[in-house]
Length: 405
Image (cartoon, rainbow, N blue to C red):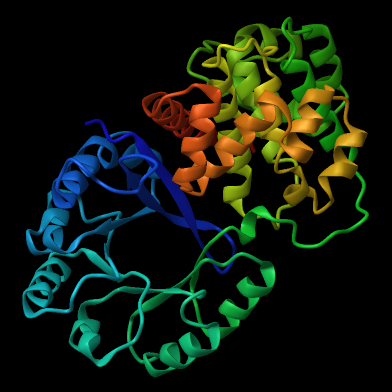
């Protein structure tokens, strides 16, 4: 049995910077492990994925991983480096003496231990000296109740994560209540609706992305757009000169474009796109727009239905413009020159592109039943989705490791 479904969800700090990811492993849309013991499944999934693609993609971020009871008793987490692993004790684990011994031992070895979906009770009191992080699901424990518990533990080194934070209001309330970290989809929704217009530099980026989505790239048009924007010009030359393929310094736009080629040009323009919005935005939101674009593109290429090259990439890239610009998507897409099929997919998830985008969003949120439904509709298998997701994560991590400013 191959366990294909893997997703990761970001954990942000008070400044909305990504500090880690919760890595979510499932065998399929049923969210269960029907043919294998959960402990064995966890171990296998960790060895298959945490030490390969996702470990590599974590970089200097923490990886939060759920461990079932027996895995903890068997000290399975100690098979992995302690540096960026956070061991999450699942909410259905009983606070037994043998679990306490395991927690003590792992904490002594330098592992960060977290209590997941925590509901305060006296049975867990003995564990607290060995716990680094407590996660409250604010749908189960209100922010007000959590705040009282946080206050009682204010003299300890325990840090707190608010889970299921869906709005900026909840983010602000949780931050005021004493939470240091936040998990949820508040970062991918517009903070407020304003009448801010598209700035010239961002408009140029939109035009560039439209150009690279075409079947035959028009290098003259791209050179013309880049040459009119000082920031883009500087970033292009910096990007090319930082590339390992360059033997001598590049000084002209035309020379730079020739060196880059189509694939690297797409990477460069994608990277500039995410860096051309407000500095106050969560860093993960920029990365997510790139990852989503790449994932949509990869999934689109697997369909029997022939899609125009680059359209799926555009759909993913532009699907978060409302959050990046704090404006309704309906307004934004009217101001940019993209195909109606892309507009319909972004606004109302219509057509094949809309199905790909809906599948992508469901995968990001680990909504496996939804994922399975779109799998069937698009005639895709789990393994294909997993491979596409892994590749999009790695592609984005590689892209963001290039310094362009």
